Every structure is written in C-alpha cells, then in structure tokens.
Length: 223
Image (tube, rainbow, N blue to C red; front, side, top):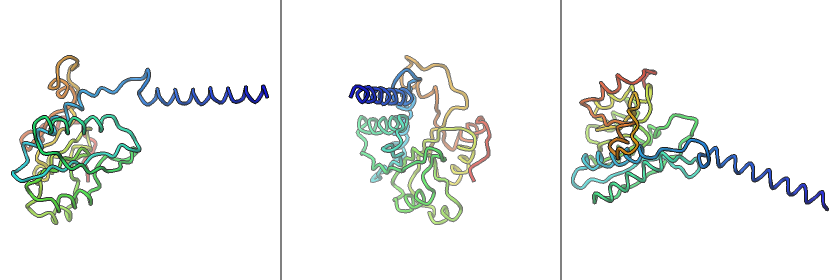
C-alpha cells in the first residue's frame, strides 16, 4: 500500500513538472515575454488605413488567423487592436473570416479563397488581410476584372515574403500594406503607440513600396 502511494506521489510530481515546463515554454513563465505594443500599434494602423479606403456604403471584411488550435498572441493582439480602433473611431464593425494556418507553412490566405472573396465583394468594400496580400495567378487576376474591393494587407517578414508587393500595387490588387522594417529602430519603451509602430513596422503605398522593398534582404520573389 505504501509503495502504491509512493508511486502515485511520484506520478503527480512528474505531471506537475511537465505542466510547469509547458507553461514556461509557452511564454508564461521566466522565458522572454511577448512585447504586444508594436502589434497593438499595427492593428490600429490597419484600422485607420481600412477606414480611409472605405467608400460610402462599403463594408469591411477581415481575413485573420484562427488561433483556437495553435495560439498566437501576435495575431490575437493585432485583431483586438484593429477592432478596438474601429469602435473608438465610430467605424462600422468588420466581418471577420478566420483561416486555419499550418504553423510549419507559409502564412497566407489560400489564393483560391482570396480570389473568390474579392470576386464576390463589391468595389465599395475593403478587405483587410492579416495574412498577407492576395498572391493570385494570372487566371485568378483575370477573373476579377477591373472592379474589385480595396485590399489593405499586413505583411510582416522580409525577402520572399514581400518581394512581389510592387507588382501587386501596380496591378491595383493592394491599396496599402504594413511591412516589417528592414532594420528595427531604437527602443520604443515609453514612446507611445507611434514609437511602438515605428520600432518594427512601416506603412507602404504605391508611392514608396519600391524603395521599402529594395531595403529588405532579397530571398527570391513569390511565384
């Protein structure tokens, strides 16, 4: 009986240790914590870009990551800040469409799904993609025609992740985008939302996308 109790006690300690290890590795313990300020600022900037592009009678649609299975604090922060900014600025609430993202694969909306969303949405609408721009092939682009909703995209990353952006701007498939800075700026602590945003990100439009992408390390363009 005593041996049985000893075994049960050891098993409980092993279980507790495993749970504590997982807690630490998920960023809840002594490991490096997630700095949410830049992503809060990026979410607010995306909301402002979307509101600016929205036409009378238009509607906002957000394409975001489904974090119900694979948690992602950055994605959750981005979406929350976006929605908060819309509410504070008295903008209409956005329809949110969630996509399951394989953490081992490139983060993007499946091109076929993106093309269908753009094809079915009126030109007055704005589609805000937290999962990058619409990487559509020539056939998918041709089916859109000249009238389609405005796209605002969040495009973190470097190299291959953004090398194709200038072509998307020239094709009229993206109105504005937020990309990562080629080099992170000075510490933003205590500098407010603007400093937090400038620390890690920048807004690009057709006017400055070529120069911004040229500064990013080249890793081969998106096919």
